[in-house]
Length: 85
Image 1 (cartoon, helix red, strand yellow):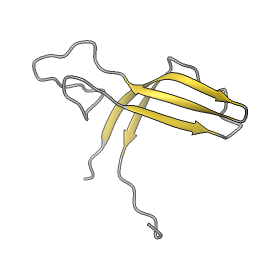
Image 2 (cartoon, rainbow, N blue to C red; image 1 turned 60 degrees about the horizontal axis):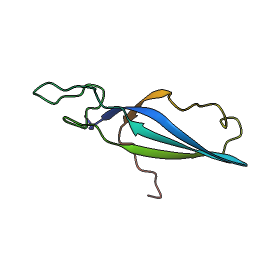
Image 3 (cartoon, helix red, strand yellow; image 1 turned 90 degrees about the vertical axis):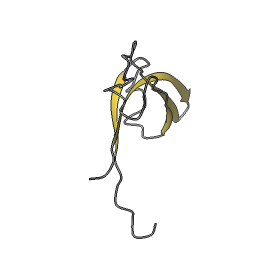
């Protein structure tokens, strides 16, 4: 079985441009941790979930569809490499 990272992200800001926008996300840590430090929403971290991600959206069908404050579940799983990789 391949390792999987599960994380909760919040859209923290949007940088708008004439024909695109940059969506900036950050991890959502728990408000309090027990002695184990486990965070079920962010299995890659203990005691403090920290992550950032930016996505350039240039597809006109997606521009303007997201709002700061929206939360997202992100799952990162390995994929098969392409033949040219």
